[in-house]
Image 1 (cartoon, rainbow, N blue to C red):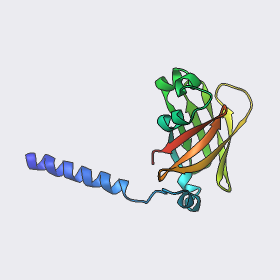
Image 2: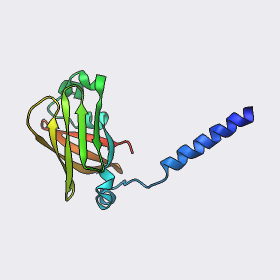
Image 3: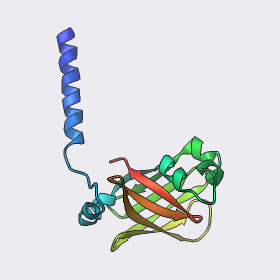
Image 4: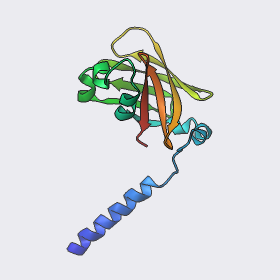
Length: 148
């Protein structure tokens, strides 16, 4: 019976590793541009540490977005069908459509809490061999990293 469970564990590990290494992900800005728009598709999370380090008008992300950020988090979905959604904490976010213009992803978003439509511009940036999407928000640069 021990051998059975050890075999199951080994098979599960092999399948997980095969899924992680199936496709090389872009790591440089040039590779991301070449692979666009596929390289933009996925779930992106706000990189709190990198964003906190870049803040100029706020002391922290919590000051910027309130306690809703620690409660609800921040996430962005960029889908192959060009649908787009994002949220930051409580009350900030929306849904819409995106398109690629040269090196910038432009999303037209209907906010969850406000009326009308807004535009978000997301630009790839590379720091320390890691690629992010950056978003200007209230005069600050937010860094998003992909969970692919």
